[in-house]
Image 1 (cartoon, rainbow, N blue to C red):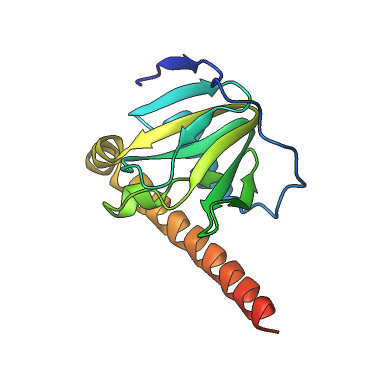
Image 2: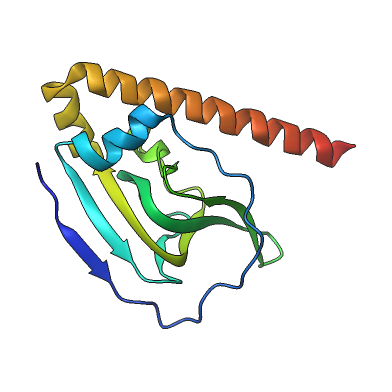
Length: 163
């Protein structure tokens, strides 16, 4: 099992301002445990507080499962500011679209008080699919459920904005 620990330094910019966390979406226990124990080609990463994990518009080629800590997703506004979309807690997956498509990152993700997570690249997922197809199918199924949940939440938010 490939496990490399990468400790990334804090950015030069100040720590993110505190805000109350938005409701988090957790992947089912199977995928969360898969992310931290059974994936053959994942990489353990440790980020210090306030560190950017990835920025909006960057190429996406890996997804993350949070083992400890939290991270928040921010979206650039046309006015130049940013809006916090969600705060992710332990057991939560983010960046999952990178495994499913070749699009760029749709938001910026930064750590809150520090983060320990496991990254799974497209290549790692392909390796998983070849070595353990049932696990890969379960992971994709769980990602589908997660995305469905997030889409329903987004639809409710849009509906509330129209009222």
